[in-house]
Image (cartoon, rainbow, N blue to C red; front, top):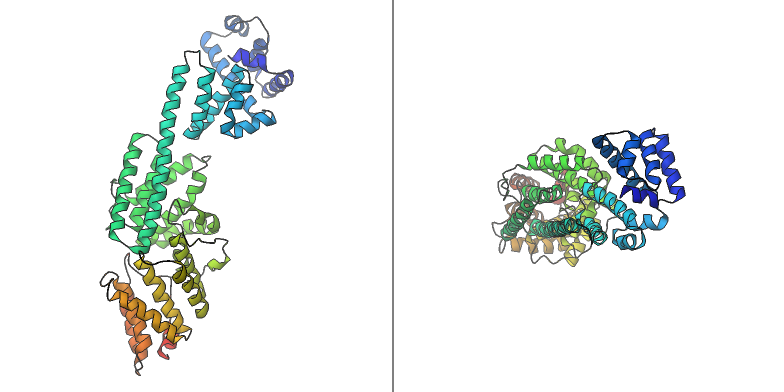
Length: 468
């Protein structure tokens, strides 16, 4: 086939290829190219003229074929370059190019797509190669490769779907802290683990790691992760290694930030925040882009983690505009925005921001989020000297915490008692009582049900509350 491909080169292509080989000191390749360009010579005749034994000749011929394929791929005409960029246009190559040239270019494309682990695109390549080998013994070979990549592509699509739905359910869990949601997450992890076992695929492994590590960091009970004996640290190390080994993979270009996010949150959970500072900076530097990965991880959670660091700029400077239909991102964004306003002593503006969440999001299935938003809202109203609105907000959430949510969120209950002291106490010892209530809250405010970690209440705030 190499001879036919070289014969099908037009004169300008042949001269350019000849020149490239000569400039790269490929004398043997140049001679072989010239001999194949001549008509009437077969491989035994050419091998004799080159003066090589059979093994050396085979190697030389194979390397020349690679160079010809790369040349065709690189110097394709505008129309052909466009169709190679658009895999769905492969039929144009099959129908409008000489058979041997089309096969040569598709084989080169096959090599590139296999290297990049792109089975969906390979399906189109093998579909074309099947047509071009319809009357060849290789037809069955390409039929098998076609079927294999169809199945693998479907597996990757299924994995992407599982990861997206898992992330949505994880975000709902973070808003609700509902144990039934945690059990659903475990079912998704089990399904992903079963799928990953079917194929030796680094992409499936990365998807499984993202899901399992996310569960371990944000939803696990005593750091237990279903369907794996690996630690979070081991999984993150594998994730990092795979990404580094595939620098050209188009998915990993973005998932690299997911790794940094999980790495930072993992060390933050362990109380070793400094170990994750580099990862924090990487995500923070590309925050607008990272927040678009909400289908791959609970990305908006980073806004709350970021707000715990008082040196960071306000989120109002971001281009990110959350959709109320995405309750998790919408809530996290406005909590972080309100935290920045609170830090700048803009309590009224912070209350207005939190009211957007109350008006846009139904908290029916999100009791934990309701606690955070309404407790923070009550605090902002008090510091903005809007006592009536504060009393309504505090009474509303206190009623729920002593009723439907009794004993479920102890830290939130402790903060509610702190706010009720600020609203109702008029004694001379009010400041002392507020200090005691705040100390009790801080002692209770640990673990996964901790609330308002991004709100720093200072002595100045306490003195202002004591005067109400």
